[in-house]
Image 1 (cartoon, rainbow, N blue to C red):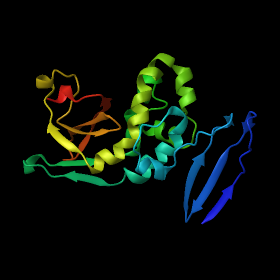
Image 2: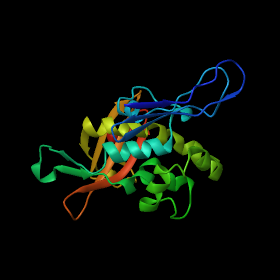
Image 3: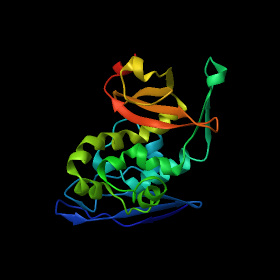
Length: 218
């Protein structure tokens, strides 16, 4: 393993530091630090950190490019098969890279199609699309969507340890279109992932959201 570290300045003055790169095999793991800091440093969470996340991260701890790589490497290109009592309604869920902009709520902050779907993922993974850019584009929508982004890393744990309900929008008095709802509690909140059937007998995503309770699922 090759560790190429740029030393971080010491002291209380306003300093500049950037990045530690760790090469492990062919994988590149990013550990970023704030470009500007005074005193202590807020480190950006690595992919390995996101896999075992326990507490809700702050905005300073996350980076959209790292989350894109995390999503592609650990959630995409695999089939999640959940068996339930009614075998005719087993859930086979396949996540794709172009699902990521929707899961993060990019469409709520940026109009147009430039950063949606298949166009949006490369912009996220390359670092072209950042939290700062989203905030400047629509501060109101950003403030109402940032919690969705901060909770997103918990999706990995949700996919591997979900609880299920068969979801009926009419009974729940909800506008969410979903046949099933995957949910569980993380960092004091319930995360919900709605899924819909497709013609290929696989399910696709409907909604990803966080709530302090699961009252609307009853």
